[in-house]
Structure formats: structure tokens, C-alpha cells
Length: 238
Image (cartoon, rainbow, N blue to C red; front, top):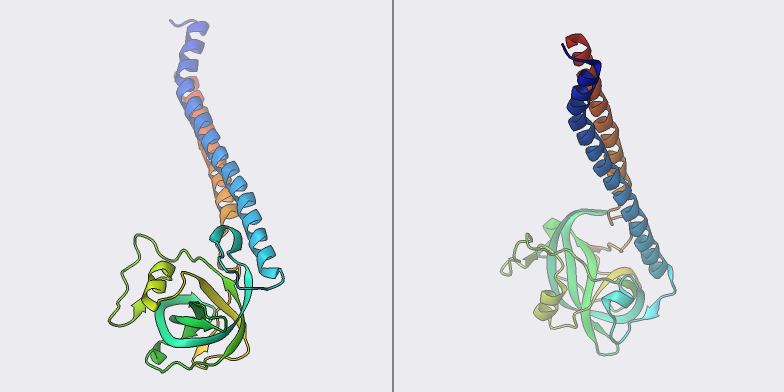
């Protein structure tokens, strides 16, 4: 015959594991939720900085812009496309699916840079480019389109799968600088400009945080159910 003290001690030992698992899992899920809230604040600060740069007064294209200091800066320049261009296959843009046209742009000051002029319809790939002289406003950008899973460009078909500034500048013999066209005094009629904005920058941290907190609630409920079930089993077996 078990004494009350013995039964209580045995019950506590059997409850220890579900309690530890429940508290440990709950702590991890709550930490993940709080971490996502920290990431949310970090991303909001980044987006605010981007918006601040984009809304600042446009400046002439700097002599030696850097990604750290000048990405998303609005710049002014004048000149014309050289007629040499690379086509980047894209989908899900504001203008639909097509090719981003990255052109060699020759400025009035003698520089040669990359200009993202906008979207070309798929069935217009072989259309001849026009070379209007432009006074334009655009955004300096160092895109992160290319990673280890990006296919190699099909050079024979002039089809690229990401804006690889370094390789594109070599292909078109330009400075390794990309300006994305926002507004211009004249346009290539084949193309629809795709200005830079912050809408396309993902910021899902709030949704992730809510998911982790909901999982924490579910985990806590399951842990309580486990503990209550253990207690009831002991009561019926006592």
C-alpha cells in the first residue's frame, strides 16, 4: 500500500517531463516571436531610410557613388542610350511579365553607365531600340537579383535572369553603376518604366511574429492538456 507522500512523489516525477517540455517549448516559441518583432523594427527603420533617400532632392550623378552611402538616392543625368542592351526576364512586375531592358547609357559628361529603362513585352524582344536624348531622373540601385540558384544568362539569346551589375557592366563596357529610370523628358516607346519603390521589399516580420505567438498558445494548450490528462490518469488509478 502506497502512502500519500509516496503517491505524491511519484506523481510529481511523472509530471516533471511534460512540464519541462511545455515550458521549454513555450519559451522558445515566445523568444522567436519577440525576435521577429525586433526584426520588424529593424526592417521598418531600413524602409524609412530608403524612403528618406528617395524623397530627398535629386542630385547630379555622383562621381564615385557607393552602395552604403548612395543606394536608393535619386539622381539626375542627361544623355542617350547607346542602343546596346541586355534583356532580363522578369514576372510579377507592375507592368506584368516581360524583359527588363538594361541599356548602356552615355551621359552628356562622357560617362557610360547602366540604365534600367523598364519593361519590354515578350513579343517585342526583337524590336529595334530607339535612342532618344533624355533628361532623366532615376534611382541608384545595387540589386540583389542574383544568387547561387540563378541560371546563367543565355548570351546567344540575350536573355538574363537577374540584374548582375558586375557582369552586365563588363558585357556593355560601362561603369559598374545601375540607375533605374523613374521619369524622363523622352522615352523609348517600346518600354514601360519600372521605377523603384519600397512596395516590393518584403516585410513579413509581423506575420511571422503572430504565427510564433499563435504556436505558443497552441503549445501551451497541448502542454496543459498533457498535464491534466496525467493527473486524471493518476486519480483513476489511485
